[in-house]
Image 1 (cartoon, rainbow, N blue to C red):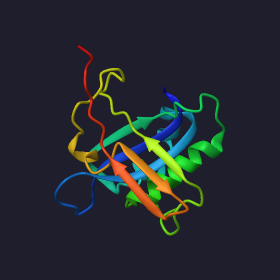
Image 2 (cartoon, rainbow, N blue to C red; image 1 turned 30 degrees about the vertical axis):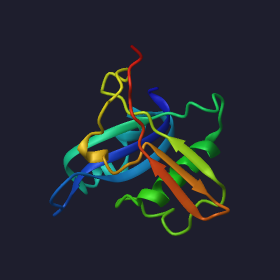
Image 3 (cartoon, rainbow, N blue to C red; image 1 turned 180 degrees about the vertical axis):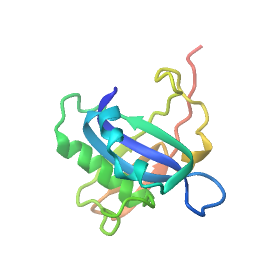
Image 4 (tube, rainbow, N blue to C red; image 1 turned 60 degrees about the horizontal axis):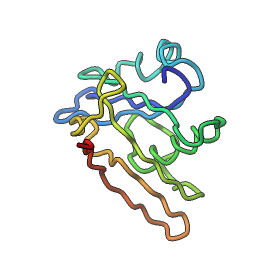
Length: 146
C-alpha cells in the first residue's frame, strides 16, 4: 500500500480557523514518500497547521491503469472541492462512478469506527449517476462479527 494510489492532505491553511479540512487530493503511480518529497502543496506553506496525510489504494479492479486513479481523483475533487486543487472542480465526471472508502488507523489494519474530525465530511460512499446527474452518499457502520 505504500505506492500507486490516491492521497489526501488535510489541515489548516493560512489564516484559516476552525476545523481541519481536506485541502488537496492527488494520485501517484510512484511510492508515496517519493511523491511527497517534491509535492508543491506540501512545500508551498499553504497547509501550515495540523497537517495530516491520508493514503488510499484501489482494491477493485486488482489490476488497473492510471486512468482508474485519475477517474477516482476526478470524482473526489469534483464532489469535495478541496481548496488546493485548481482543476477538476467545474464539470462533473462524464461516467458514473462509485467510490467506497474504508478508513483505518495508522497501522493500516485496524478499522476506524469513527471518522477523524478532519475527514468527517467525507462520506464513506459516494456514487455519481451520470445519467440522472445526481450523487448518492452515505457512511458505513463498522461492526465486528461476534
